[in-house]
Length: 263
View 1 (cartoon, helix red, strand yellow):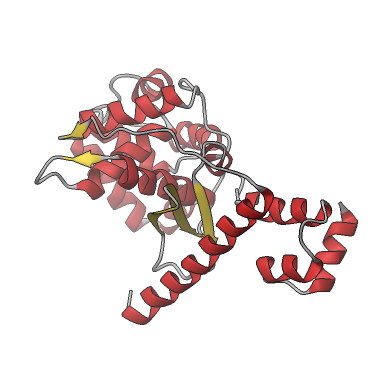
View 2 (tube, one colour):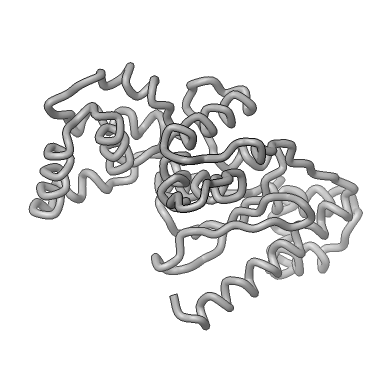
């Protein structure tokens, strides 16, 4: 992205974070994020996967599908902020008030958004050894968080000559992870050969109908609504005024009043 786009994103994100922290302060809410994996150094894919499984264990979700990545992370103190942007922006991360903040493009499909969220969380949690490609490790981490390797093998098998699109889409619907990401996982786990993985991409690039089917979003869209809920909570409790709520939500006073009356 150009420098102007980067600066506009920074400005927008800073504004949203300030408002988020402000409404929590108004309501007397103290958020905490208790996961610290600083004692683990990632030197390769295996360590990235182990860190993902450690996170799953700390979140008490076992090998189950994650229904909502946003709700899950917000429940443990992560701030998720969605911004409207074109496809040149996927996500970024930082910290504010000692809490992790993940920013994602609101316009992305649910599968891409979920992978991006955990990729950015990987950036915040993961400590990589010198020379290790952190971007790649964050992708491995995010993929493993969404569907553990052992679970994937149970569903697909240890070794396959080919995997049908129907099988992959069934997993996509349950685990909210794209067919492309699942094929990457199959190749990384040597369930399919590198040659088969390459032929998959060739087929995808050569056949528009197949490409469309592969890239079709099948998982329900998820959005963050915690900040909005907190604003309406403060308004309903008469802690803030309608004008203050409107300023925080970037809405008119009438819009805020109409929304509150529907609740």
